[in-house]
Amino acid sequence: MTAPMIWIFFGLLALSVPVAHAMLGGVAAALWLADKPMAVIAQRLYSPTQSFPMLAIPFFILAGNLMMSGRFGIYLVNIARLLVGNFKGGLGQVSIIGSVMFGGVSGSAVADASALGNALIPVQQKEGYPSGLAAAINSASSTVSVLIPPSIPLILYGLVSNVSIVDLFVAGILPGLMLGIGMFATVWVVANRRNLPRAPLAGGFRAFRGQIVSAIPALLMPVFVIGTLRFGIATPTEVSVMAVAYALLVSGAIYRDLTLKGLWDALAGTAMMTGAVMIIIMASSTIQWVLTAEQVPQNLAAWVQSSFHAGWMVILMLNLVMLVVGAFLDLPAAVLLLGPLFVIIGNAIGLDLVQLGLMMVVNLAVGLYTPPVGTTLFISAAIARCGIGEVVKALLPFYLVAIVILLLISFVPALTIY
Image (cartoon, rainbow, N blue to C red):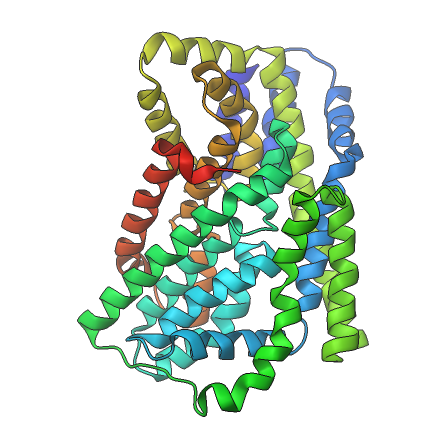
């Protein structure tokens, strides 16, 4: 069943069929060819929806949407300008610092790329940034969000690998900061080569200290999430609900800018994003059933062990596979498809599964700004109104930085301490 399922799946993807529907089409064809009951699809579609930890996904998404529905986005940009605006290419640096702070609120690279891109790319263009460079900075820096807790991709990996989400969140902080620092340095080098302007905030600290104080409650959300999880006060699902209550308190009582329209928009956005993630989770469950029935993970692990005699070679192979897959599949779908397979391989070579999760998320995050499917790439290019080729050319140094950070995470386990 496996071979026809894979061929039909990729064939449907080539025809621009949505990923979840391509998965279901591949599984349906495989079951029909093998004369297996189609009831398997209905059973497997229903099964993953009964997972209690899965509730953390919509609640964390809602918390981020609520927090970003008002003035917090403006505060965030102004604080970032205050911190790094005096550097060469200050507005580019603001995009990166903003992503680090935004990631701790939203946990979504796509939300980051859309919110900060709309706020910063037009301003960068007015300041003389080439459109391709402005889009490149936004599309690459937004992927820092997938490592800074609460991270939706890390939650998905934790669900399919049975790895502690708390450990993944804690372990993602240092690699996320490393990735942000690497991109910060890249923008600084590019800005000096192109003589891009500084962007200090008019009035400095004295003029905007009120906004800094106002932004502190929202910026404390990742601290609240990690602290509550790390000290065992609540489970990830319970913390996600507490995060929504915290976001409602901050937006409604402290900022006082949560309107009925803002609440409705946050709920609608959460429903759409959750629906997109859930249909992929449900469809991937059917593929995992076929792979398990055919014993593909076990056979693959045995083949890897017999073909690659050194652990570092296996790790390198896993990275290459994930980079290629990430260029063609969205991050959630790739995590759900590759996670169960790679966990077995990781166990076979003694690779720490938390380290594997961070490797996977960083690898697949590169795919978010890599053609032909890169989500943040296309969002940023659309905002900047420029061609994909122009953006990809400007992205070359960012790819280099991401690969260096990826190799460090892959071969220096101390960087993923949890």
